[in-house]
Image 1: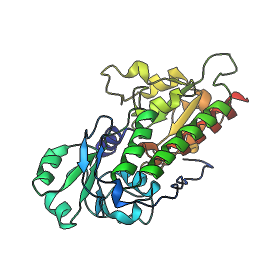
Image 2 (image 1 turned 135 degrees about the vertical axis):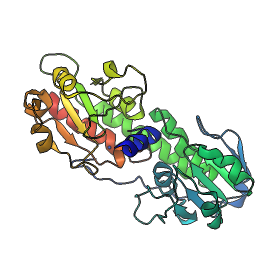
Image 3 (image 1 turned 45 degrees about the vertical axis):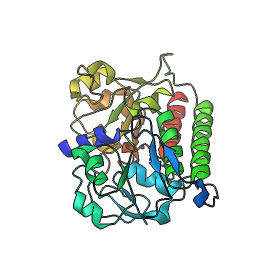
Length: 315
């Protein structure tokens, strides 16, 4: 559980989802040209002014979100290795490389000319810099705008600038359209709907300050975990008593794979039968991987939340 919570915190627990295809937006056609380089790339909260003299042809990704972005912008053929947590797309060359405990020698053995990482853990940037290997830091996004900016930056850094920009614009438009078409998140009592997002079955959750919390806020949903986040970590642990008393209208489970949770197991928890989400079939099973990533499949998260809100509002 500790590893899972660390993973969630580092990757921004942010979702799929019952009845929702985990499709990845297709990149726009583009023909990378050597003339596009050199380029200078900056990422919100990450690398600033990283200058790439030529298009990287051997790329390593040390975080799952960056792996998904690389393939979505059309840079998949340039990827030679991805970390042990990258599970999508299936063709990504998964290895034992770790983004949590990076092994410089193992990374260097892959002869990369660019490494994407979510943070500078263990002085990764300096260590690889001594080996003449450049690192693009792509940190956990805090907002959807940061996600769009990262998609554009990765496209630019890999020689797929047009595709990256097109994908970012398409994601923004899709999300705006989905949110705009969603029924207003108001319960039958006339109050804004509340929700609980479950990271694991020890009742760790996310507050509105996290990436996934930001996504839910687009729908006007009220996060019951906010009041419990006394340390402002963004990842409070709730008690069963607190949760039952908060009585959320919707429950989103991001622990279906790790912990085998679903609507039935939640309903079987002592005292939870009285919770509105349980009584009104408002328990939504998510895909653990999508729920912890901020890449292109966030559109699937938005679509699933939309379906849940509209269904609950119709009752």
